[in-house]
Image (cartoon, rainbow, N blue to C red; front, side, top):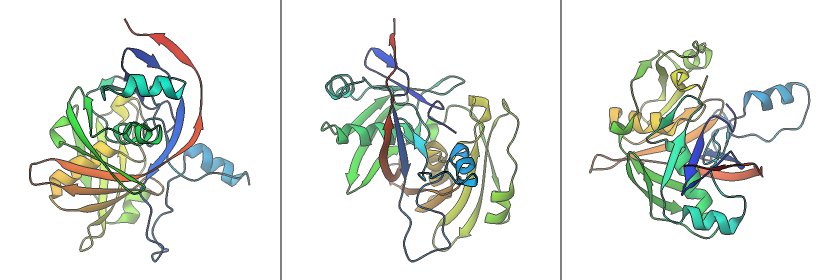
Length: 257
């Protein structure tokens, strides 16, 4: 996936992706068998095969693999994001909520000096908190914008070997326990009905899994992304991870009507 997989509309100005972020949680250094701290895109893996230096991670705009709708200058970003109101777009449609786009926006707001405690999406208000380098949001599984077929496979190896599906098919999420006692699972997400072949770090699917399993989880998704999941007593699910800015791009596309 690339930084065109999501876009975020903030305030009254719609901007194309202007930043690329890596979002995922750091793995423990004492477990060399776990995936790398951040997953790599298909383009980065091709570069690696050719011997081209790469930066590992899950690129995104207002999260992993997303475009951030944000003004081109920091003062504009503060002005248009101060309300906390955001809208999220995939290549196929607008969605009422996206987990990692929301994490990315929350992280970026703190980076420019305007952290918020709540972001406002069409699905509902999203509490935000910061814990050192990690950014956390709370959401509800009922915010899933349609059906998602969840399939448990026999092993993490089966998940890694699974082929993708054709574009336009209903969202498929596959997973298997890597260590059930520790709450660690391996997963991949194929929201092809939203125009994304594979979402290598799906925050919304992580929210759904936290609600479904009802326990704290560490989800390893894609090539190496890691998302921490914590259910709360009020029915919300908290997800969190680390984010970093990789690059910025400038191309505004005008105002919405």
